[in-house]
Length: 177
Image (cartoon, rainbow, N blue to C red; front, side):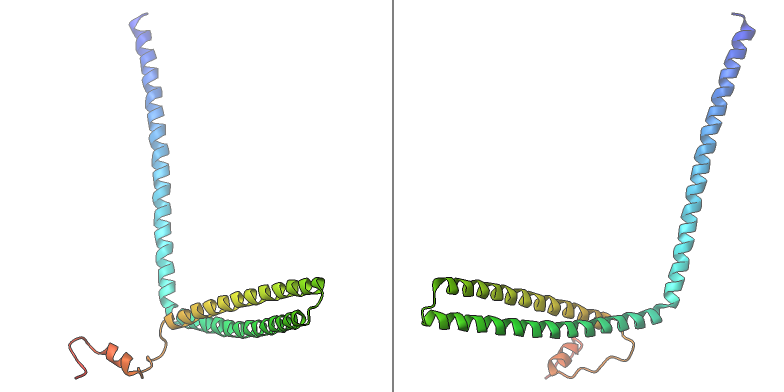
């Protein structure tokens, strides 16, 4: 093969390699620019969100406290209703238990006693379920109280009344003596 033909083939191959490398670099550059642009946009949005949150901190704290107080009131009402249901379930259980004891005392038929025992088991299950629901309400009410207590203070703190609390509030270099 003549020298000129070999040189042209190698020149074309070098140009193709150069174009491929340039294409790869352009693609990388475009991806990197887009990633940098996305990062800058994200940071700008975060800064704007922070500025908005900072300017709304006071109203947000008031809303948070209001929501926590409403939730606490709702759980108190729900706990009262569940307590009434528990009281009714216990009364029903005690009535069935007394009836069973009465029928046992007068030696009622076995079929009748078994039916009453079944009713007693259902009543006991109802009482246990009602107790569980009351406990869940109490737990939720406690959680709501914690949220109310942890809401940012909007007014001056209430002075401590208890002497134990007052003692705990003393600086460490003071004593009560």
